[in-house]
Length: 467
Image (cartoon, rainbow, N blue to C red; front, side, top):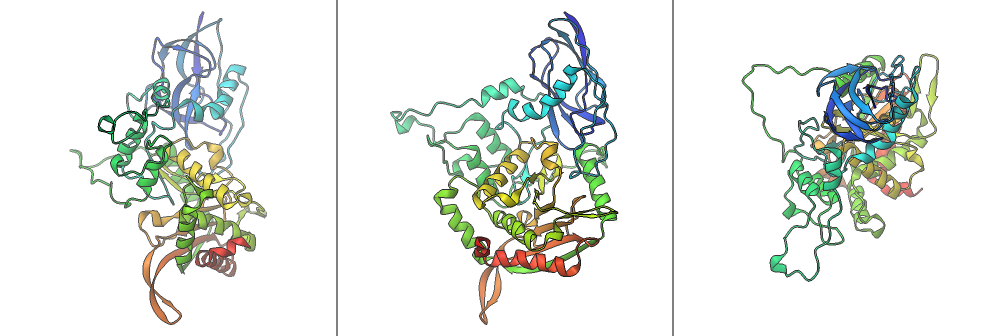
């Protein structure tokens, strides 16, 4: 046996440095190939690094919370079968301009073991840890998840324990007398999720086959609650000021927003919309057997409307360089998501090809992935147009900043009953405000206005989507 050091690798996104968020192993632990060693935070996502070899952990070389450069040894392992020399791939120059930039894949000379470790990250990170034992996040467009706790906590439960806690529990036998039965059937991870989201399980409608409360039940209940219900006023500490280091996702957000705001000349347009028929359509979809168990909201209709309006106004789905404008004949639809780590914008690839049901499922999966903090860099790259739902925070409208590399972003305000004139009479109707910001180098005022008018037309009459 020989002691080997594992250096921080470039995980395939032009990484130059990363923060050690939490160790999943400790000195003396026996580890196997592909077992998660550590969770790191890059400028774009949380990533779990798997072990490229088996052996015994000798020492953790970097403390949690420390930021280190690629190539820095982070752990030493007494490996089985002889010495394994590991070096980190060359990072190359990171040309990204923010969250929506292309993911880099440059690398220098490295041993096969390090290459395998980096390649394994994307394939194994989403499957090793439990999906249930994660704190919540708020997806803009799906309502609030309430108060959520940070993923960065000391003494985090090891991945193997999380997996054990998430093992399916046996349904309660039908013969158990009601007087002895628990009034709420929910696995421990579901109870923890409910606690994180501030949800009373007794108030949640259970849809599990054995009458148990599922994760989707809890999330659905939380999303229907008031956006401000679980927000608490924090206590001020003894210090007069708090200083928060600018790093990770917050640093990337700042870079992206500054680049966009001071590079692309923004222009915004607004219109009020009678969305009553959209609300009726959403209600019908919720009661449809085809959409049983699938999250349906007005955001789904807006997403479909964007696909429809892009076909009619293709230049809003473009990218700018000083030499040319690239008009994309596909829609990688970005959905702005507020997570405990900050704003991220994952996108649904080729959204224009999806049916309404397929789009609803894609939005729901995007929600769960963002909430669990498992959105990968590739899921945030190559977006073509973005939606942000300000209505999930009770806001009527806003002027969002365009994601770098795109030409437009659509904002949907809250939908609520207001007085509205219909056939000369004032009636109570469900009204929302649709706004959008555009890169004025690409999109002229007439195109911007037609695009927003098309979105409004679909919200006023969803039957247009059947064309």
